[in-house]
Length: 453
Image (tube, rainbow, N blue to C red; front, side, top):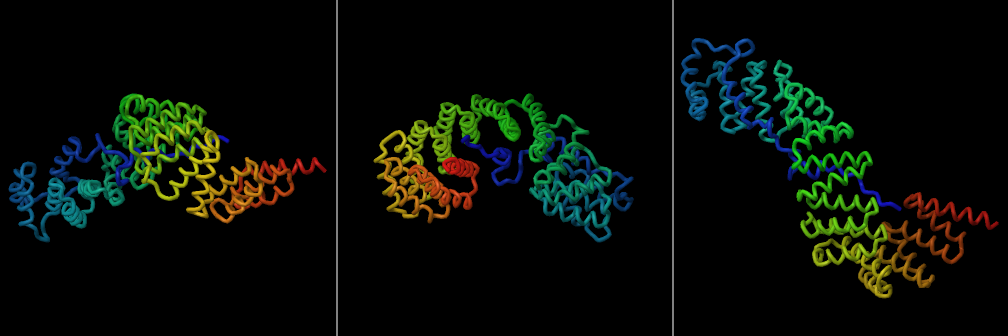
């Protein structure tokens, strides 16, 4: 049976930050970029058509703070706070909020912008700066409402739609993010941030053909960017286009930009394509060049090789990781390795040695289901059917492995030539864990019984 590689959304592994806070760092739409800063500094002017008008009475404070707005914002803050009264023109509260934003004091910036907007709720640039205070603190959910207010008040532009899309993306509202990215690209179609954000949304909404096309564009312009190759490989896998996924992953490996996860996935895909030598070579490269997040991850390729009955390759891989995993595994994973080694010995080594290893494991843990079943398999081959039955029966009491144990009892009955007795344990196995393979086995036995009269 062909091993099935689980569909993996690589975007979570390779694009999310260490704490899952952001999927990628903003570049051309970064609030700290020169373009954003230039627009922010321009916000110290007043659009009197939609914002509070400065009066003659406001002129002394305006003239006092004007020289300090860009060069000495702390001095400007001090001057405005000294003049704070309930009657102060909201325009100065807005400026105060901006000044605090300028010196990265985002909490105070929020405080004064909120006060501004209570007095003058149509102050569009204050809604924009308020949104930025949230973005700067990774409060992306909170940034959405003020950004929508900016757009409602006529401030829909590349920055507003782009940040709105980014915030939707980070709060996993992928359809909303996709709509906002499309609007942002109307203003700035070549933005790297907007295109990769849109591509990620297409990936997350399973619009894989469109995602592949957009990643083609991004890869052509940024061939050194590992994440684009990997994310596109994810879409190829979702469409069962494994050859193209392999090509992407191999390009990354050949360019020296692969990591543990991408190499292991590449090895898995080679194994799916029955190219065992390339799978083993790729797994070996991963182990020799990288340290996994936890060493139990290194055991999975061993299990895959064993599932394919590639015992020679499995032995080579086990020899490679043996010293590295020593003392690093939890009890369950250590048992998997022990049983795997016994399987290798039983198939291409010393079967008696394998039986001894399994007996020792059972002495240490009488409920070691995999060891009980494998030891039963050993005695079934000798053959010593009574001992095989004894171990299989013991394994039926281990809940996680009972289905496999009942299947083994059914196979044992067939090996004894007792087809009718095979049906009961096999049907019990199907009750515990339905399997199309076991069902076909049952049906074949039933046909054989019927044919025999």
